[in-house]
Length: 363
Image 1 (cartoon, rainbow, N blue to C red):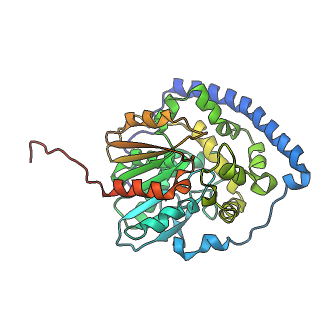
Image 2 (cartoon, rainbow, N blue to C red; image 1 turned 180 degrees about the horizontal axis):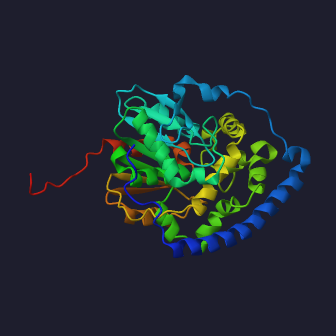
Image 3 (cartoon, rainbow, N blue to C red; image 1 turned 120 degrees about the horizontal axis):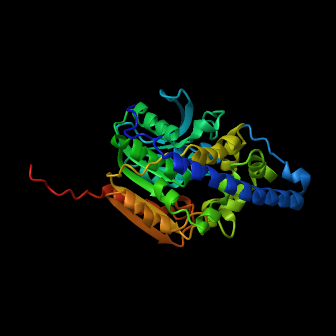
C-alpha cells in the first residue's frame, strides 16, 4: 500500500488548541444533557429493563441468507487486524466496496448488494471495532487515517488496482478520507448523507452542533456506552422507527432486521469501539482540505436529515472538481435502506456515465 500523499498531521497548532477548548466545553455541556437523558430512561423503564441484555451467541438467520453473499474474514497487511466482510459476485468483475455508518454494519447495504452483484463484485465490510472485526483498545486506533488505511488494504489485498467506493454516514467520512489519501485506488466515489470532512468542520453552525450532540456526548467515559446498551439496545428501534430520526418507509427495516444490528453490537467490546470513532474524530483531527478530489463524485442526500444540515451537501462541492449532488426529498438519513430503488437507480446512472474529458493540445 502506498503511503498517503498528504501530511495528515499538518493541522495548525492554533486550530488544535481552539478545537480542544471548544470540544471540552461541548463535551461537558452535552455530557450533562446525555446523562440526564440516560437517567430519565432508567427511571422510565426501571432497573431490570435498563440493564437487560439478551444473549446472542449466533447470528440471526436473516444475516446468514446467501442471497446477500458469503461471509469471510481478511487479515490486513498494514495493521495486522482482521475485518469481517460479506462478498457477492466473482473476482473478475469490477468491485464496489461499501462502508457502513453508525450505528450500522455490513447489513445496511443488503439492498445494494442484491442489486449490483449482477455486474459487480460487491463487498460490504464491518469496519474495525464492529461485530466480528478486530476490537482495538485505544481511541488512537480509530483515527480517520487508520480507517482509510484499512480500506486501502482491503482493495489491494482482494486483488484490485481500484474500485468504486461507497460510504454512508460516518462510513462516508471514511470514504472521503480514502479518496483524499489514496486517490489512485478509487475510480468513482459515492457518498450518502455525509459531508466532506472539511465542509463539516468549517460549516459547524450552532444548529449543526446541536444536531451532532451525540458526538459530543460520546466524549465522556462510560455513560455513553451504558446509554447505548440500555434496555437491550432499544436505541435501534428509536433510530430506525422513531418519529424524528426514523425511516419514511419503516417496513424497509423490520424487527428482524433490527435483530441483526443487535447481534452485531452484542459482540464483546463493540459498543466501546464504535463510540471511540467519535472520540478519535475530535481528538485526532487532520486537515483534509489541502487536496482537491478529482475523481467523479456522487453525493446523495436524503431530506430531511435530523442529524446533518442539508447545506453541508452544497458546501462539499467546494472540495471536488467533478461532483453531482442529488438532494432527495421524502427520504430519511438512512437513505440507502429507506428508498433503495431510488438510490440504486441514481448509482446505476452514475456508474454508467461516461466522463466528458475535453481533449488537450497533445491529442
